[in-house]
Amino acid sequence: QVQLVESGGGLVQAGGSLRVSCAASGGTFSTYTMGWFRQHPGKGREFVAAIRYNTHYADSVKGRFTISRDNAKNTVDLQMNSLKPEDTAVYYCAADRSNYVSLLATSYDYWGQGTQVTVSS
Image 1 (cartoon, rainbow, N blue to C red):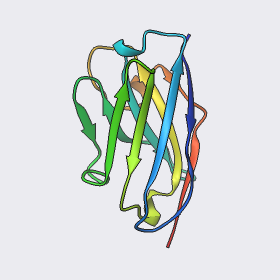
Image 2 (tube, rainbow, N blue to C red; image 1 turned 30 degrees about the horizontal axis):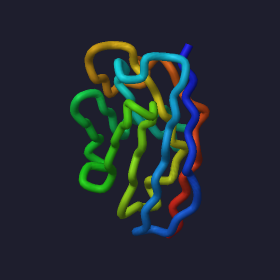
Image 3 (cartoon, one colour; image 1 turned 180 degrees about the vertical axis):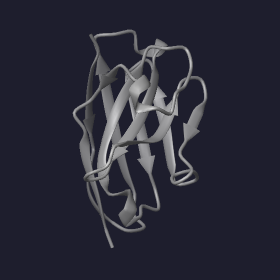
Image 4 (cartoon, helix red, strand yellow; image 1 turned 120 degrees about the horizontal axis):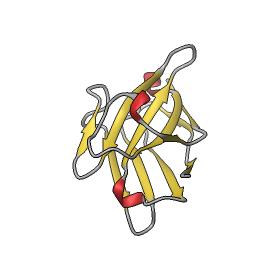
């Protein structure tokens, strides 16, 4: 069983930056596709970014967000720059055991508890 714990959320002004991190334990981290999703109130989980050997981004965050992983530390980070009020959401880290990168939340096997990111205008 894989455990994922997010950290680093918070409140930031529009145009600012924030970095959220996810620490994994209990599995073979280097073999997983790692993803970040977000959820706005009353909406489903929305793909943000994923990384396996390459990185993948939602169009809405491309050029502003950067996903990275450290297989030695079992961590995956999401650096968020030029934040907008519409980026306000709960951000979730997820792990997928499959060999391909999926943009669908239903493809991911393990989830963290989420961390709130709030961007004020």
